[in-house]
Length: 211
Image (tube, rainbow, N blue to C red; front, side, top):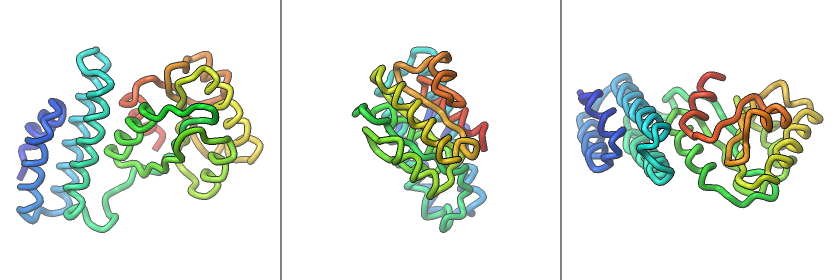
């Protein structure tokens, strides 16, 4: 069995070579799915370390991007021993950058970290109108909607999207989190979202609290 604490540490240190070496050896040992889930949990704990170090200013945005990619690669490596869809999903999140905004780095970091945490993420992409969020929420009935934006004008588009969800009768069935440079506690209240964050790791924790 894998040394789970050592694996968590390796993920936290962003030592991808070591992580993948350990995981490949683990998969080759024909492990049980129960053990595989423990390994996934250890990797996710390592992501928490990454988030903590980012909050302390020891890691930077580039490190978060790399961490998201590392976790995605780790989960992909483990897929053969995680069973056919039996790995417990935390829930579905519909995610997108709102209308008028073309930035996607923050969105993509959040997406990778949510997927690593066990969420199924449906990424609408950038510059998405309110109607795109409404239609996808109707279709997949997610746990949460994540709206991202970097420009100040994104705040208005986020409010338009929340209003559209209200008009469609969907607002009460889903949690909404907004993220990006311009979001604040005041903006969150004005927009009518449930939570806001400028930190992807924190955003994942918030969504986990909604499941």
